[in-house]
Length: 360
Ligand code: SF4
Image 1 (cartoon, rainbow, N blue to C red):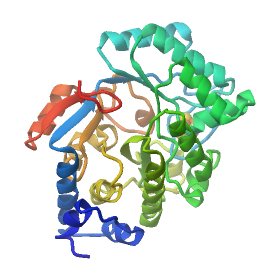
Image 2 (image 1 turned 180 degrees about the vertical axis):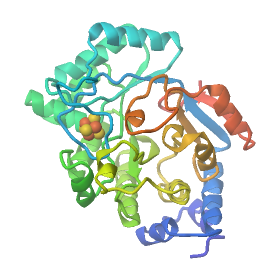
Image 3 (image 1 turned 90 degrees about the horizontal axis):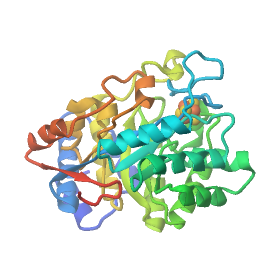
């Protein structure tokens, strides 16, 4: 493939095929910079030179979970000494604290608590709204929606309606991991299938609940799996337009059962990380924003991802425990001053945004 004309092809409206995407994910040597350069030029033409971030806070309501995903170092079983579940008082207080930090978004994804049903999720959103009125609630994911619906004996559409009414503003696009069932069977056999994830996301978008889109890569997935995943997202976005951004999540391996059991690699390499970002920018021509997650990549590689197609640095994350549970370090808070340094060092400008990408 001619890498020098790649950016022009994309900018003239041509779409990459799966085969081409696969070729790009496999490049080595100095061709990596050519692919990154094409992605960087497409990024500049599409969304300009602003690097964005959102002031947000995580509230992980409980780490108790009925599932046992192999890549998860966060979940606990009842009786584990460090298992927790926050009640109303703590959640309202945490939301108040977040509001005091001028966040525009509170993000909450938790374990699948054995006693939770749809009303439990609705309560959580109401309590967050009580402590932080007006703050955007970016919460739950298709797995939680499926779980809440099943526990309450209602269809997922009804669960989404109840959640929306209780204050859910947008859905987390997590639990996607890799949308290939053979891989899901290894890394998260109890999670919803690819078809179910896709169905619930479509349903949410159809009800006016936008979502992010994610991929978790670098465990036992292949390049074919990654490009299949991107194709599924591109197809959904063609239909619904409901994805606000794409967030590649590089697998954090250290404390995960999957890695300890020898079923996963020690995460993606730097080459794979940069190529995944670049190919995402080139392949997902209908998702405008690409988030570089400093929580997963560390700040130095996250900065380089900004040269490889990304235009967003994600959230300040005043509290983060999912990646920390899997063994990631320094995940608690990134000062916007440091984000500014990262952006300006590349000759770009940093701007605060809302969850839905309006500049603040
Ligand atoms: S990834 Fe989510 S569903 Fe899976 S074990 Fe961890 S908390 Fe539970």
